[in-house]
Length: 130
Image 1 (spheres, helix red, strand yellow):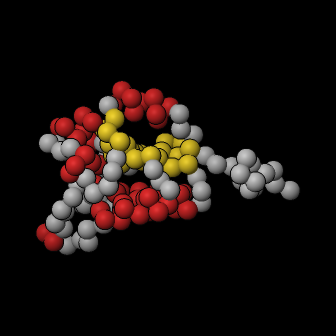
Image 2 (cartoon, helix red, strand yellow):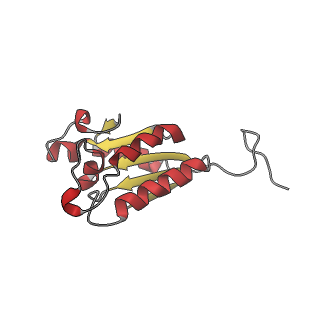
Image 3 (cartoon, one colour):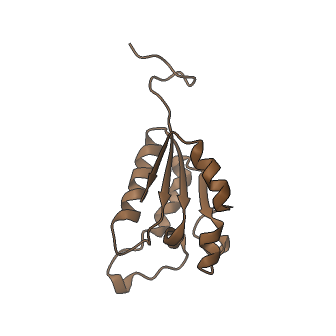
C-alpha cells in the first residue's frame, strides 16, 4: 500500500532542476533536455529550468536553422507553460555576455545573477546539467 502525499496521491514529488548550458544546435543535448523537462513535468514533478552560457541561445527569438539542416525547436519552449513549468531562469551574466536581454527570448523568464542561482540550485532535490 502506498502512502498518500499532501495532494492525496501516491508517490513523491521531487524538485528537479534542468540546467541548459549548450547551444541549441550541433548536438542533441538541448532537444533531449527539453524532452526530459516535459516528461518530468507530465509526471507532476516540481520542475525548474536554467539557461546559462551558450544555453541562452536555445531561447533566442528568430532562429534560422536552414544552414544546419535542422528544425527550429525553440517555439516548443512555449509548451512549458502548458505543463505548469513556471520557474524558468536565465543567468544574467550569460545574457549580457552574448549581447542579449529577456526581450530577445521566445518565452518569459526570470533573469537571475549567477550568485543567486547557486542558492536556487541548492534548494533542489535533483540538478541535471547538459
